[in-house]
Length: 83
Image (cartoon, rainbow, N blue to C red):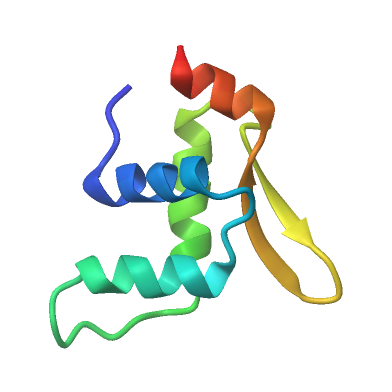
């Protein structure tokens, strides 16, 4: 499976933390972007959507409460990535 640099960064964050808040993802990923590039709120959702297409179904889940908490790599996703 071939992942882009950004997708590898997302997977790395998901492997290191139980739940990765959306603002944390935005902050980390925009550090990788070219200077002067204007961030869009839907970028994170689009990046996760594309990543989900490359991983087994159910590997990444949204954690929601009163507000969106972020994303979580499920045990199924961790097992698949570690194999």
